[in-house]
Image 1 (cartoon, rainbow over the protein chains, first blue to last red):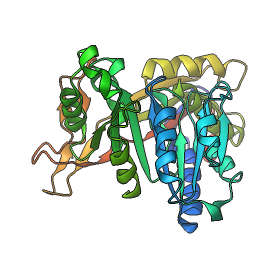
Image 2: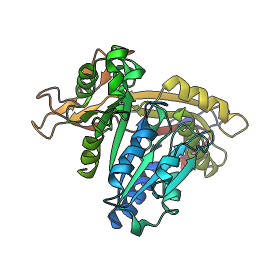
Image 3: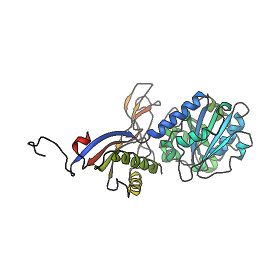
Image 4: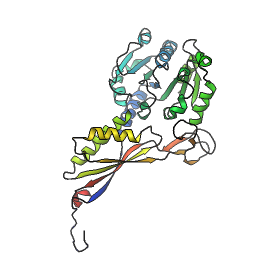
Length: 227
Length: 129
């Protein structure tokens, strides 16, 4: 463009920058906030559980329901790539279970959790456990509306779980190191794993558990009631 | 592959914007990706490139910039760059441990993933404003 032309019109090869400032995580965050509001209005605490496949999330949740069900109304949302039947243990205790099959998804998002909330009687429960898909990478970016996040790892995953997947632990309130009865056999130090978690964030509560011997399960239950 | 969900969101929101500005071609989309987010830049590019074919963004490129983590400490009031964990596998990662007093800090930057701006070509100037 030359200065002697008073009207300005762009030629096709000209380029304009347009500021958008559009957050890509906002859509999920908004639904998560709406879920949280619905939960808060019913006095319900939701806790989401993350961890690798086989770390013991389902077994831990089953044990926690066993401990807490007599005291309060507990429901469980089980996220899985397909519908699984490993929640028989929870169902046997008459706790409502909602299966969330993500089919091809690698994480739960706030939208599917919002849908699951419509399938339980919110007046009858005060605690919801949400089991995320067994994956240590994807779910961290997608808050669900829960009050606290628990990351479950196990000693059988080796000594470098925290060093390998640090992002997952940054948003956790509680980290459970499961299968503690196998620590010696695996040659994995629970103290080292704990130190790694605290390097990332010093106020995370770390609890060693064994769902087999029952070690630490009571402590996890107590920590969840305190969030 | 949460990169796929993010790529889908980018495509949908920019297509919506482009639809409201007929005649314009989106040359580039500039993203700011927080380093506390576990978003792989190359995977995101791959996902975006795989789904843009056949849409109005077929020739659009992604430009990605990392946003450094900034933390705030409720204990000692430190505010600034995060402390990095050099020992982590792969690259050093930002932590939420206060670099000054060592207690737990909160992230105030580096936790978002956003479209900062888009670059349009072929747009009439008066429509651009």
